[in-house]
Image (cartoon, rainbow, N blue to C red):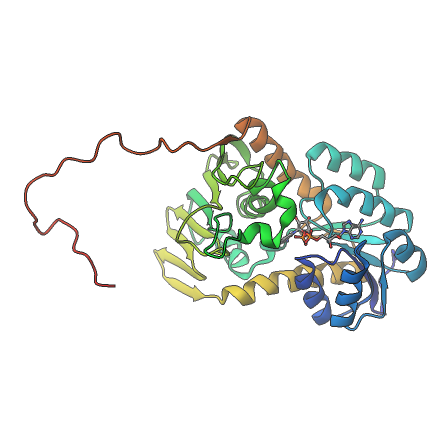
Length: 365
Ligand SMILES: NC(=O)c1ccc[n+]([C@@H]2O[C@H](COP(=O)([O-])OP(=O)(O)OC[C@H]3O[C@@H](n4cnc5c(N)ncnc54)[C@H](O)[C@@H]3O)[C@@H](O)[C@H]2O)c1
């Protein structure tokens, strides 16, 4: 499908697991495309999604689906280690691909994949967080120079999703059991989104340092990460996350702080503030933003394909920049070690004087 198209695209979805629900919802609202077939090796999962979203055909094999359906595009929502095979299969059928992140488990595999595929098909990566309305607003403010000179930035994702809950379950592993066997967890699965957003806001970043740790006994990889990056021009950016931060929600959203010489920006719990030389406060419904970024990514993919174009905002070649940072983070951090309970003062602080105005007053609950 090289030429601009006037008919709806015929789309097949590969993978009917946890995050596919957001994809199917997005496709159901997409203008100019229709999901006509779904596929999952767990055939019952494919049948269920087909019934739920009124899709005509379900398959247990990607090869069969691609051979039978005359598709224009596939949406690949399968585990990271299968993405390259799925894209190569799509390329053999001349079918364009939207693929979940990370495009591949490592930069080398992604580079080899893109060399193989060449210009046979267009490939976009579902780096959907970049499409979130508040990040696009921050990008707009930066673009307009409203912050003056940005001098320092921090993006933080603190959650409690790898802590055992009262019912004995671990939220993250209930949603994504495969994370238990991965050696790359927080950065490869989640913070790759924040790295991608940071690149979209500040340009190609250099990874200076990375520290990774594991607090959970349920996984092999890391559940805590701090990365220090430098943007062109010298701006320092910290991207960090915790999956074991008690008291934080299991799906707590990103917190952002950007210091600028004219205005600074904060994002916390869906409230975005620009303040300093001017003031603006915007509120976002976090649940709506979470789904809307899938809707917008899917619509962008469809619009570009229907126009006969492959210059996606989050193209596969753009993703190489995020995968490079991801690989560098793991290389700089070295072996991921269990966190030891030694990071606390060796002595209690001395008691000094009597109560006065500078002492804390407990707020009644
Ligand atoms: N963009 C986001 O916000 C976001 C969020 C979560 C997960 N993801 C990504 O989405 C992908 C899937 O994650 P998930 O959490 O839904 O995983 P999951 O394990 O819940 O689902 C994956 C599904 O793919 C199926 N599958 C495996 N091999 C297949 C094949 N060859 N063909 C068709 N189906 C196949 C599995 O049977 C399973 O049903 C991963 O790359 C993950 O990193 C992205």
